[in-house]
Length: 174
Image (tube, rainbow, N blue to C red; front, top):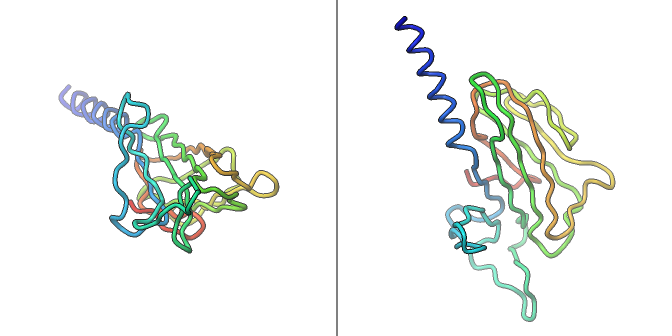
């Protein structure tokens, strides 16, 4: 009887932990520690979205879009856990082009500590030792300014955040 209670408590704890960590934001392109947290966007609740605009970047005279230093990808990436159980989880990565120009091609690399990705929807992908390499090819590859793409994946293992990630070679600030 005690074993049943302990196992039930552990499973309940894992489920609650999974639901409490459903959104994690990843940042690309900026110097470490260079991004300030933005304020509320619609007045209802604060945003935790990470910007890829490096410190010291300024808009062009007469321009209104974010400007970045050479070599950075002006993108925002959001990671969410959609569903979770003790043995599997479903996650979603949303890549948004926050620049004023088209992102012609992109490649996203994700690594997890102990999860194995079994399927990725809405992208071409291939498994790596500890994660995946995903992207789109052909006409679907380009992201226009302000456009987003969401990749949904299934994984075996306890729900978790990526331990490493990069977009077009630019490392996430985890």
